Amino acid sequence: MGPVISLREAVSLSGRFPLLAGVTFEVAEGEVVHLRGPNGAGKSSLLRLCAGLVAVSSGTAVVLGHDLTADRQTVRREVGLLAHSSFLYDDLSVVDNLRFAVRASRSDPAGVDRALALLGLDGRLRGTRVGRLSAGQRRRTAIAVLAARRPRLWLLDEPHAGLDAEGRELLDELVVGARSDGATVVLASHELDRADRLADRVVALAGGRVVAPAPAPAPAPADSVRGCDEARAPVSLAEGCDVA
Amino acid sequence: MWRDALLVAGKDLKIELRSKVGLGQVVPFALVVLLLFGLALGPGVGRGSVLFSAEPGLFWIAVLLATVLAVQRSFAVEAVDDASDGLRLSGLDPAGIFVGKAAAIGCQLLVLELVLALVSSLLYDRHLEGGLLLAGSCVVATVGLVSIGTVYGVVSLGARQRETLLPLLFFPMVAPVLLAATKAWDAALSGSPGHGLGWLDVLAVFAVAYLAIGTVAFGPLLEDA
Image 1 (cartoon, rainbow over the protein chains, first blue to last red):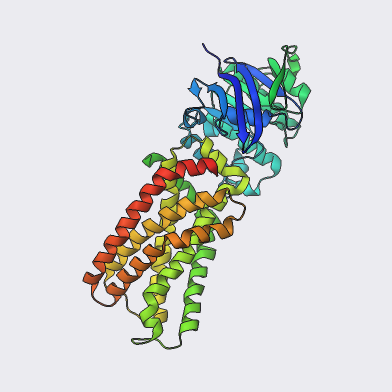
Image 2: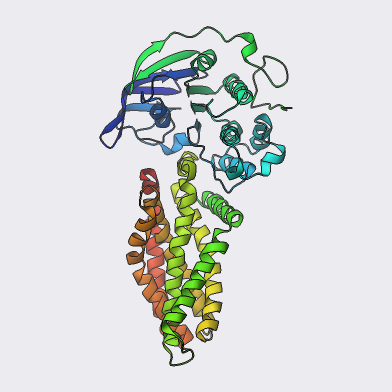
C-alpha cells in the first residue's frame, strides 16, 4: 500500500509569495501526524494543498493516489478539511448543513444523525440556524460535518481552537476513532502536548519547508482517551454510539 | 451534473426561504423602482402617455436591477465564513454548481417578474396581452440574465469591491437581452405578437450562448475566487 500523502519538493505560490517552499513529506495509511511550527510556517497551507484547495506550483503532490498537479477535483471528495473557517451556511440549520455536505460528497446519509449525536448537537440544536450558534457550537458543527462524511483523510487545522474542555476531549476521541476505522489524520495544533499525545509522528515546519521529522511520541496515557460505550475505547464512526 | 445542480439549487432556495431576503428586500426594491419611474415619467397614464409606451422598457430595467441584487445575495452567502471553499471542497461538479445557482436565482426572478408584470400593468394602465409571448420572453430572457449574472457573481466573489464590480460587469453584457426582451414585450402588449417572435429568437441565442459560457467558465472562475 502506497503512502496516503506523498509530496516531493512541492511548492505553492500565492502570486509571487511562496506559501510552501519545497515540501517533501509522506504520510502512511492509518497514521496520525502532528504538524508543528510557528505562525507562518506553512502548516495551514500544507493542509490546504493536501485538500486540493491550493494549487501545486512545482514539484509533485500525490494524495490518496490522485496527482494534484493534474486533478484537484477528485481528491476533494475523499478528504475532510477542518479549517479556521467553518464552511457553514448561516441561514441553514445544523442538520441541513450536514445533509448538504453528506449529499455533496456522496457519503452515507446515515452518518448525519450519528455525527449529531456524537457531537452533542442532537435535540434542540439540530434544527437551529448555524448563524445563531455560539462559536463553540459552530466549531462542533464543522467537526460534525467531517464525522458525518467519514473521509479517508482528515486534515485538521487548529482543531481544538474554540472548543470547551468537553469538546476537546470529544475531538480527541474522534481522531482516535477515525484512526481505528482506518482513516489517516494530519493535524496542526498549537496545543502541542495534546496533539503530540494523539500523533504517531511529529513533523516540524518553518518557512514553508519541513525542517525536522521528530521521532514518534510516547503512547498516550490510558486515561487521555475516553470512549462512548466504555472508558478508553475510541469513538467508532463506523459503528456509532450514543452520547449521553 | 444534474444531480449536483439540483442539490445546489435546493440549498440556495432553502437559504432564500429561511432568510426571506428576496421577499423582504428584492421584491419591494423592484416595486419601488416601478413607482419611481411612474413619478418621474407621470402623471399621465393610458394610451398615448409616456408611461404607457415605455412600460416594457421600465419593466425590464426594474428586472435587471433586481437581478443584480439577487445575484449579489446568492454569492454573499458563499462569502460568509468561506462557504465557497466548502463548496469547492465538496467535490461537486462545477458545471452543476453553476446550473444550480443560476436555477435558484432564476426561480426567484420568475416569481418577481410575475409580481412586477401585474403591478406595472396596474400602475401604468396597460393590459397584459399576448400572454404566451410575454411568458416565453420572460423565461428565455431570465435564462440569459441568470447565466451571465452567475458568471459575474463568481468573478466578483473574490473581489474586494464586489458590490460595485458586479453591476459594472453585468449591465453592458445584458444590454442585448434588455433590448430584445423589451421589443418582444412591446410587440406582445401592442397586440402584434408575430412581430415579437424574431426578438424571442434573439433572446434564445443569447440565453444559449451565456448558458454555454457559464457552464464552461464557472469552474476555473470559482477556483480563482
